Amino acid sequence: MSKQRILSGIQPTGNLHLGNYLGAIRNWVALQDEYDSFLFMADLHAVTVPHDPQKLAINTLNVAATYIACGIDPQKATIFVQSHVPAHSELAWLFNCITPLNWLERMIQFKEKAVKQGENVTVGLFDYPVLQAADILLYEPDLVPVGEDQKQHVELTRDIASRLNFQYGSEEKPVLKVPEPLIQASGARVMSLTDGTKKMSKSDPSELSRVDLSDDADTIQKKIKRCKTDPVRGLVFDDPKRPECNNLLTLYMLLSGQSKEAVAVECADMGWGQFKPLLAETMVEALRPIRETFLELTSDRGYLESVLRSGREKAEAIAAHTLANVKTAMGYTIPR
Ligand code: TRP
Image (cartoon, rainbow, N blue to C red):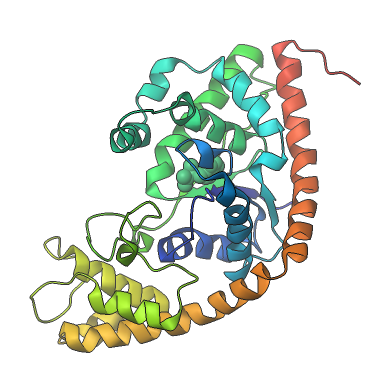
């Protein structure tokens, strides 16, 4: 029997941080042996908010380097760039024409991003989940590993697939495979270092709110020294009144590879003055090999490009096949 398939992606809109690693990439690494994995850089999504053309290509290569530095093996997983496979945009258009407007009006992330941006919200930002549906459905994955914040987009994807199947397929012969979301454990939801109630984010204006995977030891030490804590002595998980405490303990747990119980016991009587250096040291050591490999890879552009070239070839073949099936079902002739 052939392996089940997973597909996921990250937007190349800035340096990847601890949240991307612990919340997403680390899980993909764990899944890559068991699943046929398709992992991409969502560079078409990256232009749905204002972007710097000078940085787009380099950010895209950096995300590819980060995937590999974190342990994604290009021999096992297919790593590719969304814009290198034109079927994504083409299928998104076809989906646009079967997706009711009010399905998109319900998208929470759009509402949040639109509020943040104020003026000049583009059609692209509104349409972003339809492009995401195309990203996913082209590869007929069984599972889509994403964070909680993307669950609604995967549900929309399922709705679009079912609608297309209903309108243009038959029950015996569905056009598209309907995938399942694979929501990552909540323990891996990494929060901001300056506000334990907000997710760690690339777009947070404060650098101190996140640890980038390319940060050096001094920078990490500084960020941990200055991160937000609380005046309480003794450290515990899961106290809703102490979100920072829960986040920092969770980081320590994940980065040290210890169980929650072990960390709870170890830190029960600690004050912040004792815990912070321990966390900083653990973080520096855990991220050191990732940072070193990242720096090596980013200085070897030829290698990265060769990985992306073979990724594109594999992705393209599958995507073209699915797109042709959809076009045929919708009544298009496929030129030969
Ligand atoms: N929207 C996702 C995010 O911002 C990125 C993404 C784009 C994605 N296309 C996807 C994730 C397809 C999973 C599957 O995190």
